[in-house]
Length: 386
Image (cartoon, rainbow, N blue to C red; front, side, top):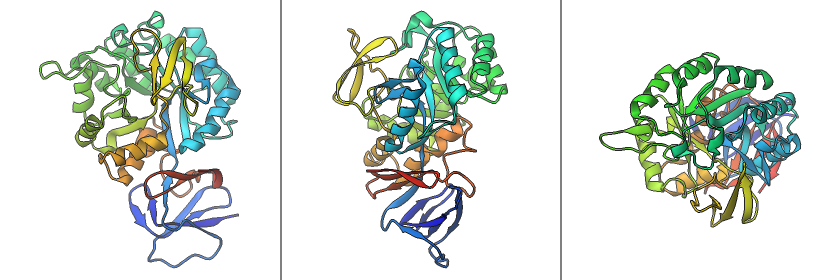
């Protein structure tokens, strides 16, 4: 049965509206928006008073949560993640792998390719391969024994196994064949991200001009900015058309640096991500990220070995959008854009998610005025209440 939503504020694709009514149709799609100065519609109205309505968030870089990891290659675990993501305000996502051998990654492609569309919660809009074409100096919590040069042959096989769902891959621009690989994948209509890299500014630029469009968790796992050697960070800041992933948990990047990047690139080109690992929504303790033991405490996931490097995060995307507002880096509508539209657009899935538009699936959030999550809807049906 169709209904209308009434609320204090609506974050539509191009405007933020105060008051009004948003239609949700019988088939779980968005219908028309009637502004506050329009005529009150007839029919059922869900009145959310002084709360706000936003599009469902889109997490395009997430490895695990609730004790599950995408690399476990367990469909039931992935399905549980999809349901858990609704509690994080996420209604669309890209299950994200770690570096691994060809066959292991191929098996993940087959599993998700065979089952995507059956998930009960947040919708799988593609697969993201974070690796394996990386550089050891900036390995982070990735296993360097699997690092290698980009292979078009491997990509084509993975894509076939994924039934076209391999949407995005991250690589280091300095690896041999990176430019040719970037051309091939981008001409295939897919997304190349740059990260875990010691590349020079020139090497990063060469991949961008070949079609790369995203920088993987900007500042983390990449050569830094120096006034004589701009590096990967310099490329991420200087190139205005590319989108920069950003982990806004307060641990990966200082809030002041987050604010500086947003001012430089504008919210139009900042994609908030979580990089969440299996300990997301779980108690502190010991976990695994791929093949590495991890200790989770004080809001951080760190490798158990002597390096104690950050190993992904336990961030939820609903908290990332709240953080950037609480840090005074952006206004609420920009935070929503960075958590929904920009991630979707950066992965070429914005024709399916990230915006409130007529005819789109009615995947939306009810937010409190402090940006905290109150309720998550999927296909017009309430699926989570805080």
